[in-house]
Image 1 (cartoon, helix red, strand yellow):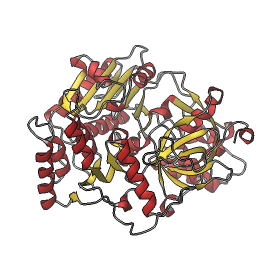
Image 2 (tube, helix red, strand yellow):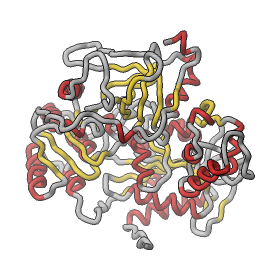
Image 3 (cartoon, helix red, strand yellow):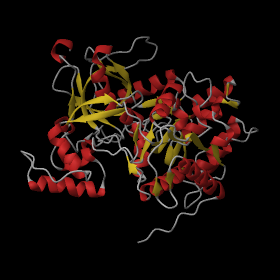
Image 4 (tube, helix red, strand yellow):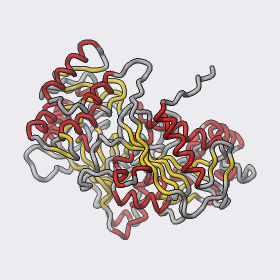
Amino acid sequence: MTKPPITFSEDQAAAFDHVAEMLRQSGVNMEDGLLVPPREAGSGVMAVIGKAGSGKTLLLSELYKTLQQSGVDIVSGDFESRKRREERRTLAILAPTNKAASVLRFRGVPATTIHRILYTPVYDPEYERIAEWLAGNDERPEIEGLTDQALDRAFAFYQTNKSIPGALAAAGLRGSDFITGWKRREDPLDIGFVDEASMLDDRQFQDLKEIFPNLLLFGDPAQLAPVNQSGAMVFDGLPEDRKLILHRIHRQEADNPILDLAHALADPQLGFEEFERMIEETARRDERVVWGQRVEVDLMARSPVLVWRNATRIRLITAFRHVYGAPEDDLLEGEPLICDGIELPMKHRKKRLDLEARGLIKGAQVIYLGPGRKPGFSRLHVIGAEDPQVSAASIIKIEKPDEEEPFIPFAARMGAAFLHGAAVTIHKAQGSQWDTVQVFAPDLYAAARMGRVEAGQPLWKRLAYVAITRAQERLIWVVRNRLSKPTHPLTVDDLRAAPAATLTLEAEESLL
């Protein structure tokens, strides 16, 4: 069945034309497919700015399709041929987090994380021959230990999904078989699209400008700015003619009550109590919005409760672990974790790259699958990562109410650090989306009572906007400090699709 052609609104069409002109100046003509070798200077930075539902993702998707049809190669971050010709034009589509990248991939856009572009994989030479063949740069190889049928499976997979690691997995290989390490990118790329650009800090922005001479940012000005950015986002400082504003709100096939609520927050006269009445009235007529009398604990393992205050987050996590009967000195399989960074000395920089490139970056959402084979190691599923199963040296921290120091049930001496993830702050939820989102309203009421203002808008409104727009299908506005009982135990059966690749530290026996 042929899909109907996309119809742009006036502001989308104008933005598309402006981007097309920017790329034309850099030597990429989307209209006739004429590609000129890349220029070192490029055409600079441009931003597409709009609130949730304004059509940013649709525009990004159509630009990607048009560039691909024009002959621009897509760089995914999973393999780059050494045989790349200098005159090739390339496009990389990036997001700050695994979850944000997976939202785009779900919509057919081959996105990867910024870390996967900054850090590139080093392939074993034997398996690099397969990668070159799949990419169309070499003849079909003969590899000891791999049958013709295995290579056929890899080839068939690659025809429908342009992922080298995915194709090699279809042949029966794991990432640890063919990727020997990771290195910091030295050579620049060409065209970069960055989604969720409101999450970028100045350092990331500078890194991206060094790598991409042609950079297009997609961002929401109503979200929360990164911490320590004084309420400013990286695209705020661009010249006005480099900011393309999408004003019109695009609906789904049926009107979206979640977006209606988010955009109602723009009314400067709207107070917190009036907004809550609006939510309650919406919940009476539309099942996609729920006026919740308690937190639904069954949802917390995969979709964390969104809160403002750290104290609330810790109380909800403690309650979650209590109702599931989690022991104080151990984790249950299926407990959610949030990566809190990598705790490694500088001499282990290579291992830091390994961990970050596999998705264990600060803020990554992870499900605990059980202990690893060595003390201090954990088997983990990284939500949204292209290769999600890893085993890593871990430092697990369980925070408790009214206690300054977290409880550590077990830990390696160094590795990836994790906090519990059954509840997260709204700041950390940016860039992620879930089918169902629970927002803890008493926290937003507290923010409203404090009267704080950020970037000219009441803080509670910015918090509410970000929290509400994390919901794809259903929003639960929780109004009471209560927790339901679980209807089933925690499970990880749906995540055990592939074996975990082990991430170890150099001389790990002496370190753990």
